[in-house]
Amino acid sequence: METLTDQKERPPAQPYPLETKNEATVATTRGPAITPSVGDGALQLLNASTSAENSEPGTDDPSAVKERRLLRKIDLYIMPLICIVYFLQYLDKIAISYASVMGLRQSAHLHGNQFNWVSSIFFFGQLAFEFPTIRLMQAFPLARYVAVNVIIWGGLLSCMAACKSFASLMVCRALLGCAEAAIVPAWVVFTSQWYRKEEQAFRVGIWFSMCGFAQMFGGYIAYGIAIHLGRDPHAALRGWQVIFLVLGLLTAVIGIIFFFILPNSPLSAGFLSPAEKRLHAERLRENEQGIGSNIFKRAQVYEALKDPNTWLYSFWVFAANIPNSIATSFGNILVTGMGYTSTESLLLVTPLGAYEVVALIGLTYLSMRTNQRLLWCMIGHVPSFVGAILMATTNKAPALVGYYLSGGIPIGWTTILGLTSTNIAGSTKKITVACIQTIAYTVGNIISPQTFQAKDGPRYLPAKISIVILYFLITVDLGLIRWLAVRENRKRDLRKQELGDAYTVEENHEFLDLTDRENPEFRYVL
Image 1 (cartoon, one colour):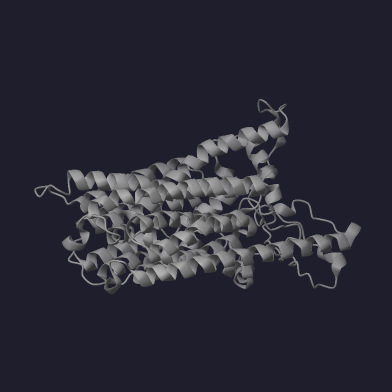
Image 2: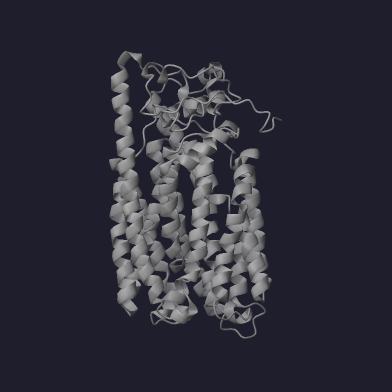
């Protein structure tokens, strides 16, 4: 196995600097021909024998029919698997909120802002393990690595049922964050491996909408446990302990199943025939980024750090997740502060998830049909901005409506994740950007519970005012991302026109593991 220092990378393709003077050679030369071992995995599919394809039944079908059949097959196999795991990931994350009003704070003798730190420490663990997990994702088979993490976090969540002190909760929550660090970067990579650009936004919306479903069903589960166990003084386990045990064990079982049935990439997909794999590689050609490479390239890391898109995407993730506690760890506490009981809050938080599902699927569908992701995302932010104002200025029912409207903000999450999948090319660069975003996500979530200071309860007005400001800033950020993408696409189109016949493209350039800046054929999705 080659080491990072031994690896001989192909000389990097010349970036696409618009100010370059030697225009005649920018698009015509890219160095020596590349072999599949240092290019993208899709080259291995394209180099497969065509005899396998010719032997497949139904090869006389029109290519459009075969593509639709293949897409349906991928949807039916891949999407349910990644949706189930993402559903459990979010359900496990919000379990701490349900536990907070089911006796956890009393059983663990938490006081002051200790619950805030129990909420935050999860993201410290996620932050600490983000860089190791990013390298491990490339070093090991992706699906297997993620499955092992799912099994570990399920076990850790179950262990939280035994926590009866601030220290034990802090340890378990920190380790839980480490185990979940791989999920978002891995799901971005999975989406780009399996779907074309125009298909990705809607699919990201589907698997991300699992957060809303988790918010709904989790509330009903917690309510049932609170009614049947929480009121029984003789029960061997408290309601919050049952929550952790049930969700933890379920997650571990799903992780084991996930380990055996989810393919690591299209290359190893047993449910696809050789002909379907070749067709899939051709389907992804226009993505201009292939299906992934396991070779670590330092140059792509440096490019990611210099790319303004990296930091604009990451700012949205950071700023949007500072208010995230209203849906996760502080959701039930916030609703009780509006004048409802603890048991009522378990049910009253569920419409937030319902609105989130409708907003996510509806807006991502519209963005797919109109090819205007960022525009629809900004439109979706407007009700959430209004909702934040209602939460800050009203009480009881109007404040509760405002709380529900905040469920539209995750449309931004799906948009940013989708843009990371489609607008960031180069395997190492994509994973690096996803890693930086996850760090931004963890830092925002570390800050989030700290905005809900005990002294500000039960209304937490300072936190609500900060939410109004942040929702405005992230909407402006999306507008800036769109403006830069439009400008760069126009520059590339103009340069192609100026070169005329001198502009040529290397064969299979889509699968040379080039970054979006290196590949002059790349166009940014809006």
